[in-house]
Length: 213
Image (cartoon, rainbow, N blue to C red; front, side, top):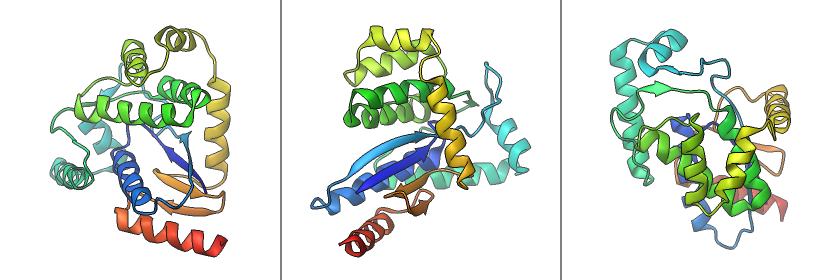
């Protein structure tokens, strides 16, 4: 079974969705899976210095501050339920994630495990530690933390390598109707949207596997 996980590293529901999906996969260990991470930028035109997260979300969605805080509480609770720690106040700004996606693409060329570990490392850097996922020093450090070569990561970031591949992938998914993330696409034809609970993913995986069989 091929699973494409379309997401952004600055998307909280993507972190929840990945942890939920992983728990679901643990419940169906007999199911062989190839998991690939695909790029999606929630805010491709954001300034290099980023923006205040509350101001950004208020402008983008028109939500009052009280509603935003209620949403944050719900995200923290859902994260805790699947073993992911959203630290209150850690995510005070939102940043450009294009270079993070370039390095994630490179990680995928090094092996499926590296891409998955790097994705989780970036989620943790942003949502738990409150760090800037556009910062090259952070991207290199988190690459090394999962066993990737730091010098090669630095070289990728200093160049424009994988920029075209990332843009083409983003354009492909958008042209096929992906407007929000996470979008989990199974065997190129089944779509599961959002940070669903593990049992929802598990049921869908079992149904799709049974239909394929």
